[in-house]
Amino acid sequence: MISDFFMEKFIKPYYDYLLKEKHFSLHTVNAYVNDVESFLEFTVKDVSAVNEIVYQHIRNWIVSLSSKKMSNNSINRKIASLKSYFKFLYITKTISSYPLQAHKALRIKKVLQVPFSEDEMKKIERTDFDDDYFGLQNYVIIVLFYTLGVRKSELIDLQLHDVDLNRREIKVLGKRSKERIIPILSSVVDILSEFIEKRRVQFGDGYSQNIFLLKNTQNLNQTFVYRLINNYFRGVTSKGKKSPHVLRHTFATHMLNAGANLNTIKELLGHSSLSSTQIYTHTSLAELKKMYSKTHPRFNTEEEDLI
Image 1 (tube, rainbow, N blue to C red):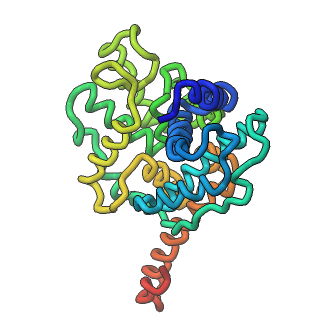
Image 2 (image 1 turned 135 degrees about the vertical axis):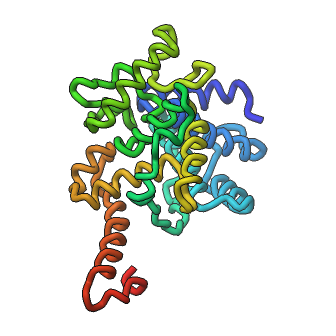
Image 3 (image 1 turned 90 degrees about the vertical axis):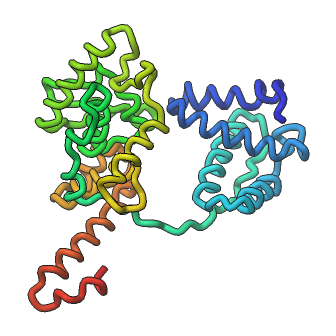
C-alpha cells in the first residue's frame, strides 16, 4: 500500500500538473493517476523511492499484466500513463534518468471500426424512447453524437451557454481544453430548442449548467452514456461494437462517403493532425468497393474478392 507521505510527495504534484497545467479533463487525470498508482503499488515491495525505479520494474509489471490476460492495447495505454508520469518526474528533477527511454510499445492488431450504416441510423425514431423528459433527453444525446461527431467526454461536459441556436452553432471543449465550433443542422436546432425549454421546466435554473442531467440532478457520467448507446443500438443493429465512439466513427464515415474532405472532418472531430482522421478513409474505401462490385455491369460477382 502506498503511504500517505508518498502520495503527497510523488502523486499529488503530478495530479495537479495534469489538471492545472496540461488542462486534462478530470476523467483523463484520474485514469492516468490510477495507472501510476497501480504500478507503484506493484513495485512498493522492491523500491522505497521513485528514483530507485528502473526499466526492469516496469518490465515485470508488463509481464504481470499480460499474465492476467490484459490486451496489449490496454497495457500500452497504461504504459503511456507511466511515460507521462516519469517525464514529469524527470522535468521536475525528482529523478535523474528516464526509465522508459528504450521502451517499445507492444504490438497490437489493428481492428477496423465498423460504423453503423445509414439505413441503421435512419431507424432511430423519437417514438423509440419514453414519452417523458428523460426519454427526450436520451433521444437528443444519440442525435448529437451522430450529427456532431463529439467524443463521449465532450458531450457530457456540454453547457447551456455552449449552444447558440440563433447562429446554429455549438461550442465544444475538446482535448487539452481546445475549443471548436460545430454547426448544428436545422432539424437538430428544432429538437434542441424544444429540449432546452423542457429542461428549464424540469430543473429550473438552480442546478448544474450542464445540458444533460441524471434523474438525481447529477451530471451525466461515462457509464450512463455508454450503457445508453449500447442498450439502444442492440435493437437497431447486429454489429458487435455499439458505443459512443462507434457513433463518432459513423459520423465521420458518413460525412466522408457523402463527399466531405478530410480537412473538414478533421476540424469537426477536433483532431490535432490529419493522420488521426485518415483512418476513416479505410471504411470509405470498403464502401466504395462494395458499390463498385455491385454496380459494375461485367464483374459484379467479384464483391468478396474486392473487399
